Structure formats: C-alpha cells, structure tokens
Amino acid sequence: MTKLAIMGAMEEEIEPLLEHFKNIKITEFANNKYYELNYNGLDIVVAYSKIGKVFASLTASTMIEKFGCDTLLFSGVAGGINPKLKIGDLIIANKLCQHDLDITAFGHPHGYVPEGSVYVETSKELIEVAKIVASENGIKVIEGTIATGDQFVHSMERKEFIESTFKADALEMEGASVAVVCDALNVPFFVLRAISDTADMDAGFDFDEFLKSSAKNSADYLIKIVNKLNK
Ligand code: ADE
Image 1 (cartoon, rainbow, N blue to C red):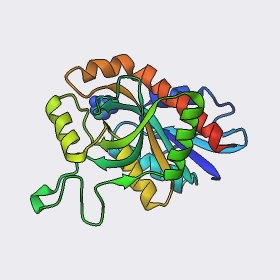
Image 2: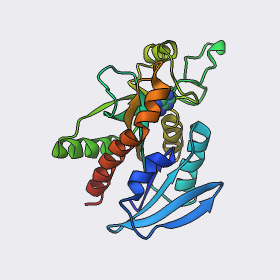
Image 3: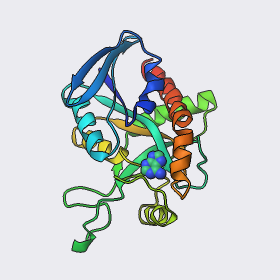
C-alpha cells in the first residue's frame, strides 16, 4: 500500500476521522474537497462524496485515478436488516450489490446488468485485518452482505424485498458503487458501516438521532484498522 483512500458519504461520517489527523492539505476537485495528509508515515486521502451511488463512484474514481490511492476503506452508517444488528452495531461487507438496479423486464435477476455481476466481493485480506483488530480490542462486528441503492429505505415492504431478494444484512446508498469502481480498477477495498436505523417506519427519525454516534463508532474502529495496516 502506498496511498490509502478513506471515504465516507456525508460530512458527519468523515469528521470523526479527520480529528485524528494533523497538517491536512485540502484540494478542491470536481465540486468536492479532498483532504491529503500523512499519518505515521502513511499517505492518506480522505473525502466524503455526498449521498448516493453517482457521487460515490465519482469520488472513489477520483481518489484512485487522480490521487493515486491503491487501497480504499469506506466508513459510515447503514440501515440494519439482519435482526442481530442493533443501532450502533458494526457490519463489514464481504460482498455488496445494487438493490435498485432492475432490468428484470429482460429476464435478468435483480441487481444484474450484462457484463456485470449481482455481487462484488471485498478484499479478504482487509477483512482479515479488520477481524484481528476487532478481536484484539473486544469489538463486536459481523461480516455480511450490504445492499446499496439510491433510496433512503423507510418501509417494511422495501426492506423485506431487499432482504429476500439479496439476503442482505444491511443497506445503504454508496457501498456497491464504490465496490464496482474498486473492483474494475483492481484496488483492494472494504466497506465498514455502523447501524443508524433499521430501515423501517422509524428510520428517518432514528437516522437523525443516531447518525453522529454511529458514524463515530464506525470511524473509531476504522482508525484502529488503519493503525494495524500501517504496522
Ligand atoms: N443509511 C443509513 N440508513 C439508511 C436507510 N434506511 N436507507 C438507506 N441508506 C441508509
């Protein structure tokens, strides 16, 4: 690893990360800010993309192609589907899919387009490091499938569709698009999320209530992983 990308979607998701860093150089590019820094000898670029798959793809591509990042870690919040996941709990994706990608009219499965695949897998090596860090620090994290779409999900009907169609454990609005970019550009990556809501009727309320604390849970764990990667 020569340069690490750390991404979130919202300012609240990267704020608790930036607090760990000093001497940050800000570069503006394509209507976004990129925070460049050196952390214990490791070059890092931090950015939040804005919400949704399109902005997340742009930011991930920029971090890799313009800034030269060769590993990418995503940190943020998600809606929980797996009943084991309570608000504040951590999930690390072993694969991601796009729940709103739909050309079923042509006989294809949900989440599939020709020359693509329903699921994109994350780096087994990075997950291994994350698990070691979790066990060393007594952090509880589950590994599972994350479904991504350009929708804030706040209904049982949509949540159950995503659960039954993709066997997803959590859902959010950026991860799978970052996965597609990293996979295409051969950049090892992972997506870490802390639960802010359970994508049901109360999701909007819970999200507002728990965005900050859950984003911090994710960021605190992510920093420990970065420390381990940099050993
Ligand atoms: N991120 C956090 N909660 C979410 C939800 N309910 N839907 C989509 N993205 C989310």
